[in-house]
Image 1 (cartoon, rainbow, N blue to C red):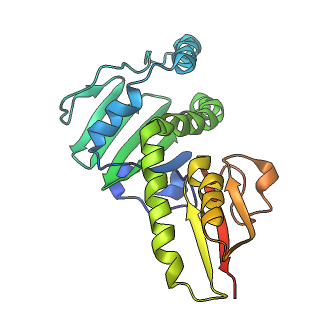
Image 2: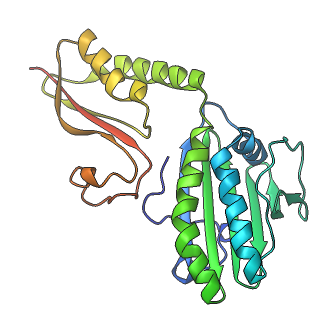
Length: 254
């Protein structure tokens, strides 16, 4: 998953040009199989999250004092189909296609847009906010960082335990197929956008055990989101600017 450096979004996925937004977040995950945007929405909401429900209750209690509509939180019932003008929980559906859902919530304090887009096994969740007054700006000072953490946590549920094993197997087969093509002294960089050790440390440990002509060169290893201790590994990608990567530089013995 990645929130990464600024990426140009389709116009319908942002409330305004990025430089005008008061909040902009983009996170990406790789699925084990292709899904529609609505299937992703259903899967994101299918697991009870007590912390999130508590956060919504606190949000509603505080916001009610300022005339902000209650949102209640997410339900867990799957939605079979959706059309423009429908409501998905507290969001209004402004665009509905198999590969793109555009959801909005607007009031006198701020406008919020969340887009779920899919392309094959890749899913991106893009959120943007425009504030209209001091309360809206103060609200986003608290909600902005929490939103990034909530989306990151929800995206983790898009992977089932069996998916990790399946992806690790595919990665092992790729390594096995590519390694013989590397000349002696050559280098190969193995990288994966994952926080799972089965796709990182454990994958490379197994590879080195079965390939005695391989050497592990100094490389970042696992990079976890929001870890300031790892800023030295990728100086141009500061804490919180990624969602989890693994890098291993392999060299074939001469």
